[in-house]
Image 1 (tube, one colour):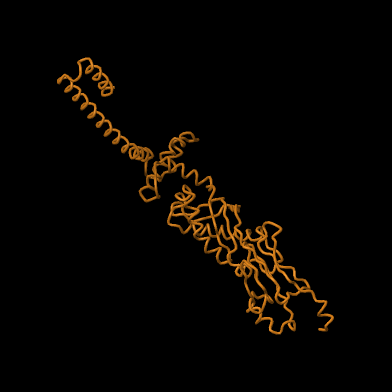
Image 2 (cartoon, rainbow, N blue to C red):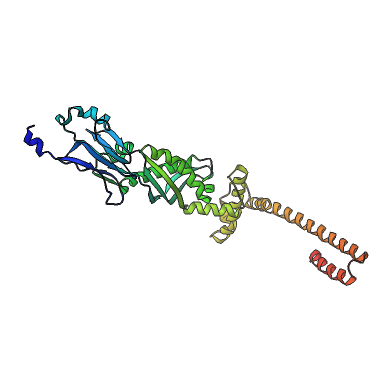
Length: 344
């Protein structure tokens, strides 16, 4: 290269990024035909990091501060570019700035219901929505795994990928959790904590740190809502054990009898569906007996306890009157109220 050509060369004295546009996460300094002068200044602000790229390879990473670019501050790049020869080997590498500010108020959601495995209901489909915040923590990983050689890389670009990671992690996290989905749906903070623990690892692989994650709403499919309504109506709580499943089945049979009476064919239609050799009357009687017996026994016990309580109160009132602690008028009035409850 002649001396004239050398003088015409344009050199960069200062490299910096002012972040004029919000939402840009990575920005490549426009080199074009410029070359970085030996001793140039690199300004990296508190909310930024800068990466030097040489022939597709990450050479050096700079944190916040003012850096004078010399063979001492760019040891890796010096070895790559033979900077010890100064301008005999032109210094022209890509410089990419990264914003490390926390990106707050970002929304996530299931555009379509996702299928998860649940210990109570086996396979269910759910939709969920919420918000999260994140930041770039490792620009080298972010560059090599996500942003690459683009001139700019925005929040919208990366969040397309983060949403996919979030949904995949959500499905595996909830599906493999020891806590049932219903318990987590009732406590959205617990659900968010479960998902966030898994997302931290998933995001870290791409140089992204998850700051906050919350679940704002959970939408259950109609069929699951109906199943829950039946389960609540049957007085069932907790997991579906074998005994509870049997109780749930009895409840469904009992519920089907009045519905069958309204349909064409009435109860005969329901009886026709029962197995041959078993009379519908037997099945219905047995089912009703099984359903009524526990309630009748409970009612009888409660009535006996009430009678004992009322009789005890009468005896106590009589004793108080005999001791002169209450008048005969007071005793008669209280006695009348108790007898009214006792004999109806």
